[in-house]
Image (cartoon, rainbow, N blue to C red; front, side, top):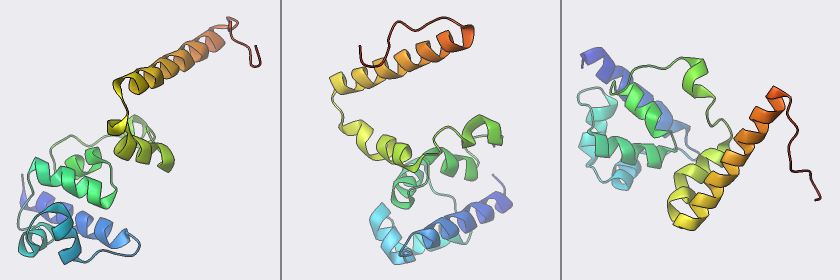
Length: 138
């Protein structure tokens, strides 16, 4: 990991922290993620790079997808716009998967996965010209 990556990561963390409304202070964010004020200052100035656990806590506290923080920190290769950026653009869905998914029961998760599989099957049939067996109101 080079010094430039540390500096860029720290600057991005600062921008994300300040973009929250109302903006968080370094002290507030440090308390929220369980690190010292000094350690967060070192992250934001590029003197150090946090570990994976801290990156996950930063992700949750800043409301930024974990994958974006791991990429910014250099733990994952940069993705092209077409690969990942549009996966979950809808804020409501992103928040659901970030905050609510882990609270679902196994049965609820399986029902949701079945629904997604059904949608994928319908899209596949539609694109291949087959008629769907399900019609609304039946």
